[in-house]
Length: 207
Image: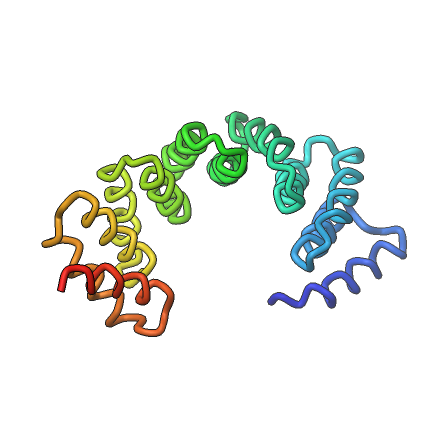
């Protein structure tokens, strides 16, 4: 529900009684991280992992906290370990977050490899479709980017973000017959949005 202060109060209450489990401490770390104290959260996750090295959720959450703290190299190393472990349910999510970390390390080709890996592990991973599209678009792989945006739009047909990026890709591929309808749709659906403002810039160029 987003009430992190209340969650922390209750989890700290359990902790003060000496009955807090590793799972509760992991939740306390998550609440700290989401409330903006990623540094303290890392300390909590470190303690959880020391008490239970097999707790994958704590390792993953620690890596997310490191990413928030601006330490993508350390985060990437942990995400990669989790993603390559065939016996867990966090592989796709870890692969996606590793792509984010590698992108922040200015390693676009590696980031794209990992976003594609996330999709190979879970072909319904919406955020990975958008990330793959963004990475391909930045790298000049326009057709691949367009395919990723189209895949996202099949699941979220009213996404103005995906429509805008698909329209821009079509424009770069000299397919104005495709670009214009998508960009006009962005303006109709969200006229006051930043996406609509960018779409109008392209549409004005062709008037």
